[in-house]
Amino acid sequence: MPIIITGAAGFVGRVLVRRLLDRGAEIVALDSSTAALADHPALRKVAGDIASPAVRAEALRDGCNALIHLATVPGGAAEADPAASRRINVDAMYDLLLDACAAAFRPRIVFASSIAALGDPLPGDGVDDTTPLAPRMVYGGHKAMMEVAVAMMHHRRGIDGVSVRLPAILARPKGPSGMKSAFLSDLFHALRSGTPFVCPVSPEATIWALSVTVAAANLEHALTVDTAAMPATRVVTLPAQRIATGTLAAEIARQCGVSSALVGYRLDAALEAAFGRLPPLATPAADRAGFTHDGDVATLVARALDAIAHD
Amino acid sequence: MPIIITGAAGFVGRVLVRRLLDRGAEIVALDSSTAALADHPALRKVAGDIASPAVRAEALRDGCNALIHLATVPGGAAEADPAASRRINVDAMYDLLLDACAAAFRPRIVFASSIAALGDPLPGDGVDDTTPLAPRMVYGGHKAMMEVAVAMMHHRRGIDGVSVRLPAILARPKGPSGMKSAFLSDLFHALRSGTPFVCPVSPEATIWALSVTVAAANLEHALTVDTAAMPATRVVTLPAQRIATGTLAAEIARQCGVSSALVGYRLDAALEAAFGRLPPLATPAADRAGFTHDGDVATLVARALDAIAHD
Image (cartoon, rainbow over all chains, first blue to last red; front, side, top):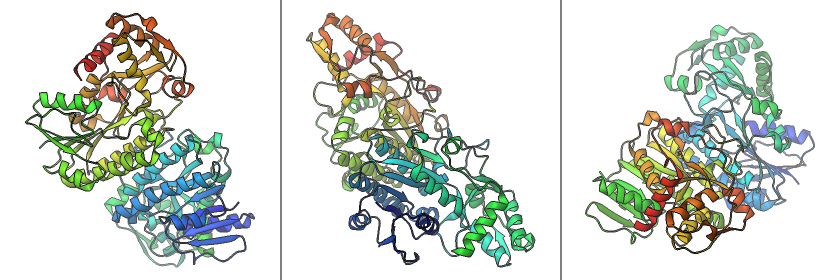
């Protein structure tokens, strides 16, 4: 039976599809447009709106042992259009979970949630697996609601659910992403092309980050992680490096052979508050379950630059 | 401006409406039927489906400073018809929250959630404010999802949200309630009328309980509790007494002047698992915020019997 990936033509989806095809997997790729995906004999593309029952039925046509749900109205777009976020991030996902329950016996469902579920500002002394959820953005609120739906359907034995909260993923391709944290990726593109960049958060601003390579590896791991290794909530915050923006900029500049003086700073107070105050992060549940981060800043930056070069 | 109460004609709603009218409050009572509510000059009744925008608009006609949301598809009914639970317990409530955001500046919204949000079986060594949510019943899953929605809309400053998780409330009137825990109330009715009762859980089965009197007092307290006294999740598990069914039966029999030998036991394994294994409960967040339980078993039973006599 194939692995179904929703949002497969997106930034993370494309890397994940390539990775799983390289492993010999059979993939069904569902997205609103699948034009960005290269043809492959083991890849079946389904283009359409995930809110459409017919589109979901076409994606689940050959059964559903495993599904990775990446499709989402992203954070900035959700904040601009909360009704669209409700329609896709809550209602369509709930319908998809019901469809998956009906299509197979306890399929493994991997849900790409977000650290936005935790809310902001976060407790200054640090975040761990006991930090209570206090979402403020529509995106994070809807992700947190659906983490609960995944847990409920898991405990009802309809699905075998695994939710993973993604941090900032580096580096996105150029162009609009609908993600409020996209400025982090823009920093890579600017330094790579040797052009000046005005960063909207301070050099001291701290982020949690993963390369897209390791994000995809963690999603692949979530497909096969022992169900007993997951907490009762069925959700883990993924391991991530906590990095100051200035440190990140300096390492990108070093690897690109340009001066980090290309980066200027002009603070956007809302962005600094929402994305620049991330406290120390401990992820013992994810660590125990075998999820990982890039290890060090140089490796993360090298992988992020490599992802840009190969997208 | 009036206080709006949804589900106002239900078991807890009726006690709460009487209590608030006695305080001199102006009340709008919304329910599918409001026939069970006595007329009162300060009471405006709105009968209709809470999923209807027109019905909600009629209820919010005079603004909305404060709203207590009791309306729900109850646990047993939700389990029998998950789509109805989704329609009322998730979708209609979400719409109601949006309506409330639009009708007033940060109205206080009190959401009657349930200990079912915690899931079952619960950790044997006890439950406190850090116990992760792992709902298994549709009812509890939907309540947990909407606790998150309340928290999100609170942190967005659309509402001033307070969710309270209700334990078993004693004692319900006779007749079908749609609640799986209704056997606890049936125990009161049987002993009060001196008739034998077959209890579907063991005498050692432990429950968490509040009298309907104290449940209503806690909901009233939630209307005015200092917003800073609530945790960031905006939800507290209400204080409750942990009582063995046999102890409860003996106290009811004593106060009713009948023999506790009227009670026989024939276990329903599913009920025993879902409602008879409640571990020790600590509710420090609710305690700090001024919520209370009945204090001792005799007081709880006396109040529950009084509620039956006056319903």
